[in-house]
Length: 117
Image (cartoon, rainbow, N blue to C red):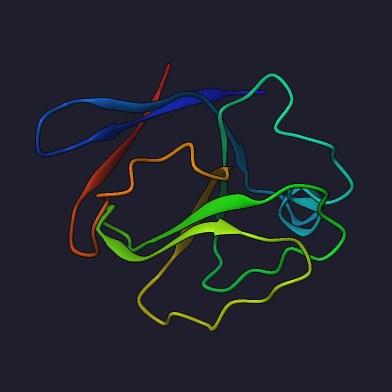
């Protein structure tokens, strides 16, 4: 599977270095369900979505909703299992990471870059 990294555009600081992309119907549907943790990755980018749930998840996660240019539309820190989000119409993908893995000062309007490694 392809690997990516996520970088803060304002200063080039790497946020996550081992990120996978869910871009097929199966990988987007499954996401992180039924997994005990993030495994050997730091994050997962779910393409073509603007709302998520944490049903059947076994750990909390950070969720960052991004628009097409990588701008943060919404940041939910340490979302617990068995929750649902609103739909965020501007979002086109969601970055998921282990709960608390992303900086607490990550802000709406900030831009993140997703780069193939």
